[in-house]
Length: 74
Image 1 (cartoon, rainbow, N blue to C red):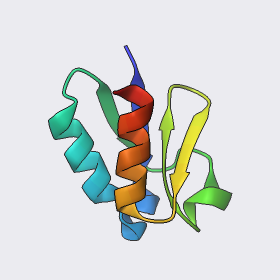
Image 2: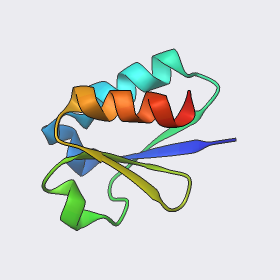
Image 3: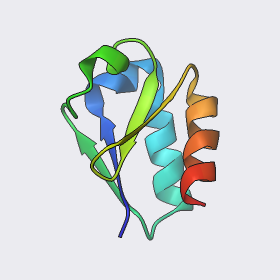
Image 4: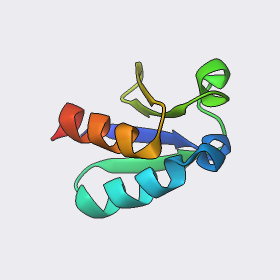
């Protein structure tokens, strides 16, 4: 099962709406909120989420992040 992790500290940049939308649209995937996912450099600049253990998906806007995640897992 694919796990998607979201950094709670990144929610201020808009990834919280992506987390909620992805969780509703893809309930079969495991969506986790973590206080920190260890990608502080990217986290402070852009919206992001981690797929699995290594793949970091980044985007300038929440809408772009949503589309990138959908393309990657859908």
